[in-house]
Length: 419
Image (cartoon, rainbow, N blue to C red; front, side, top):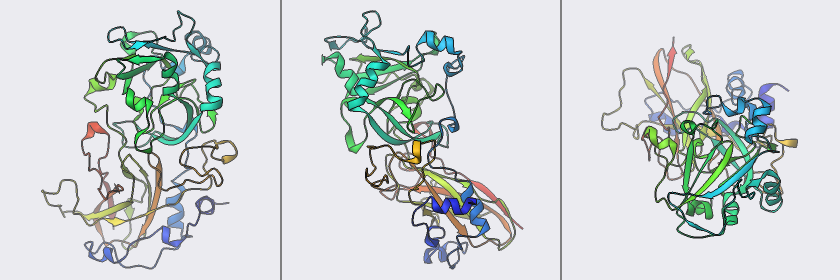
């Protein structure tokens, strides 16, 4: 089956209307978008654009990696991994009180007392308490997702309650193995309210051991890591070894030391994966891309092609009044990829219908979508292509949070040359 046929088969109800959405609005967009018949979905241009989209879920070895450590913990020899607790057989989690800001706990889970949680005990919890959800993993300062997966684990709150906390517990901070070097420690934190409760219909914060139905590899943070559904990757600490319960009233994340906003949830943003940049006059322009669906949701993806020399008003730095044109967000796939066993979403997975294996709503928050479209052609000249996401409230990227250190959401710029 060639690339286009396979892609079409993997996206339900994918008809001609899913590729071009020019409409009457395009007629006033500086003449760049003309009224056009719907594009032929069997066109070679479209096949080329769709072939760049890849599978929806990312195989574990296909994730981009921004791990910290010298040496990187996942690169250690197997013998060393066993020695430091980076295998399922030797992993132990300590859940302890912060000695500097102690809450009142009835017990602690520690190696010294022989009460640390091991992998067997975690799996016993998982038999009754396992949770799964879809999440895109993204770095706060990088303009592309690291990967998309179905993450499985036990709610962190179930493990916190094992210490029988009584009072003076305001935050949780946690860290993983860092080569036994205090200078390499990378720590993140959460308010205890977020750990104990799931606001706004969010999935729980989990102590995670599987990705796409398979055990976490060492490179993905295995045997166990934290995954915070609405958060960037710096909150999702790899090689988890310690959870510290504290009365500290503020965040103490390592990432804050680099001027980052450590309380910022995922933003919605779009980017282009494929567009030809050198074109002939009148040549149809296929384009495709992805959008990260942040905490604000996603209503649509838009593009704007601006001729060289045509400057937007200085009073509109975020291009809110530019002649944006809607693209088409592709529907949910029926083939998920990513190494998922039998290519089926595990049951139950939050946000999915257990009888059909399909999302209950689309686009799904905290996940990704693909989009595509074809432009009918341009006259000779140089142009700038931009794409943006529009959230569920109709607010266009990079708003409502345009500041870089609260999460990347800058509008990309791609130069097109037409001869």
